[in-house]
Image (cartoon, rainbow, N blue to C red; front, side):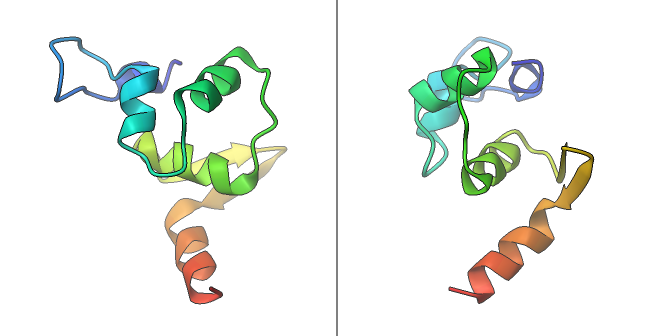
Length: 81
């Protein structure tokens, strides 16, 4: 939620984007998934984490002591398809 609160919301008068707004503007994410991740209840796949990271305007994600460059990951993921 901390990162989501930093994402500006162009569609509403609120300062930050809502869970629904974030999900609606990102193919592959749902409000329920965003909510579950924020609560710590979800076990999202790496693909969902990449989508969420890009939706939050982040270039890198660090988890389990590993830093992942999102642009490089997406490029490699698309080239293997």
